[in-house]
Structure formats: structure tokens, C-alpha cells
Image (tube, rainbow, N blue to C red; front, top):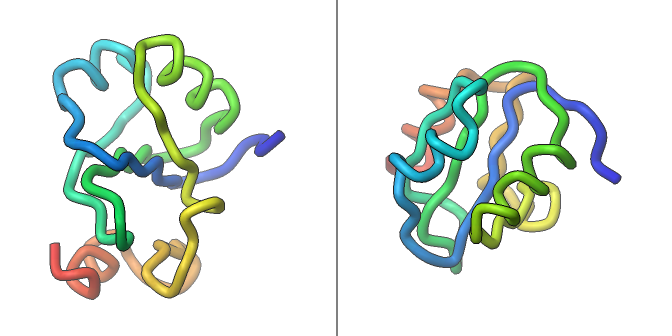
Length: 94
């Protein structure tokens, strides 16, 4: 449904455990931080090219309820072609 993408975020309405996320996705480089999207609490930022549908399936199988950035999108969404991840975090106040 979503296919492959580089540098993508997954958002959650609740606090997630970085330890559990890393155990669920041990093959991916990721960062777990507070979400800067309104109405969301946590986000997983996955660095590099990966299959979004596969990650969503793996997270759901582990008991998470991820919302892909394309669903939660707004002016606060990270766009790597326009800014660095550090600039994005600074803009969002993280």
C-alpha cells in the first residue's frame, strides 16, 4: 500500500518503549522521540530506505498502533528533500 521510502516517521497516540521498538525492528536504524504532530505522543523515525508496509505489519504484530506520517501529515511533517532531520527537530521544538 505504501511501498518503499527513505527516512520515514511512524506516530503513536501513546508513549512507546524504545527498548520494545528496537527489539521489534532490530535490523533498522531508528530513533524514538516525542512526536511533534498534534494529538500524537511518540514517533519512530527510521533512517534509510525501507518497506513501510513491512514495518507497519511488524509493529502491529508486536502490539503497537502506528500511524504513518502520510496519514498524520501536516505542516509539521519531515521532508528530507527540504531540511535535515536536525532542522526538522529544531523547528518542531524537540
